[in-house]
Image (cartoon, rainbow, N blue to C red; front, side, top):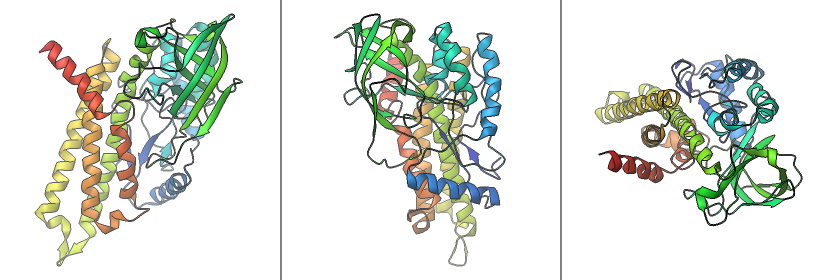
Amino acid sequence: MRGVGVVVLQILGAAVALAVISGLIGFLIVHFAGSGDAASRRAGASARAWESNSEQPSVPLSCRERSKSALAPLREGGSLPGIVEADDDGLYVVKFRGAGQGPKALVAELIAHAGRDQQRERWLRPLATGQAIGAFALSEPEAGTDAANQMTTAVRAGDGYRLRGRKVWVANAEEAKVVIVFASTRAGLRGQGVTAFLVPMDTPGIMRTARADSLGVRGLGCMDLELDVLVADDQVLGQVDQGFRLAMWALQGGRVAIAAQALGIGQAALDEAIAYAKQREQFGQPIANYQAIQWMLADMATELAAARMLMLKAASAKETQDKSTVEASMAKLAASEAAHKAADKAMQILASAGYRRGSVVERLFRDVRATEIYQGTSEAQRMIIAANVLANG
């Protein structure tokens, strides 16, 4: 596998709750690094074009066909299996449409978990087969880490609700067919008065607004949403006033997927550094012969391997435990910070070759920073972990 690249999701078996199909992030990067073969060159060229144009790439047909198998366990009331594989043509970016965890738990699995029969019937098949993309609208200008501080309101209007407000950094919004919108239904109660709504993106009153250019992960399809829409009672996802609990449930799986994404970026940075260190000569020998370089590579490999074990543990916990909040936070924290360090060390090893605009390491360096921010900052993960340690210590 590493001969042609490193898949962002590095998962073992169907028990692991990470998969390759849609939700908040909308894609996970598949970094092909260090092989130099034709597939990698094609992948790299495509990646540079998508990244340069902030273009959200389409999912390959082969991935859509593979995802059809995800429907069977849903019909039987189970969860979605983990699917991890790269296309034979070495595609660099795969946008995960449909029923994927990571963001599987953010869209399709959330519908499978809490949706009504008609909601499942309408959306799960299109999401799982790639005919539709889902988006997850939780963040607001004043509701980032403090996600319970929802300013978007849902007020009773006839046989439904009127949703009014603004959502920001909504990944997949550029192409999404459906969005899960979280809104306050009981003012002043914060997380005790938030409801989730399933809203088709062609509903009158939704306006998509392009966001300012981002530093990295530029194929994410992020947009802001201005909302003034009417929805029916049957568009409530789960129970009224219980939407915040659903959001937190979904983020348990989403954070495991961010950990996997970070590990893919970190491994790609390590692969780039190893390849460069072996071929770059200074003072008459490859720089890989120097202890300073060897120690950086050793630290990168060790920290990524340790984070990978936490990610796999968290993924298993998501499948086998009722609650996996702490495991998910530990995995996301460790993986995102290990990957950031790996990208930084790779930049140091490549020096000017990595620092130039357009290099693989430069792109990795920019992309990895987001993994320490979205779906909960590193500081928020430490808060969650510390609260658990203090409560159970």
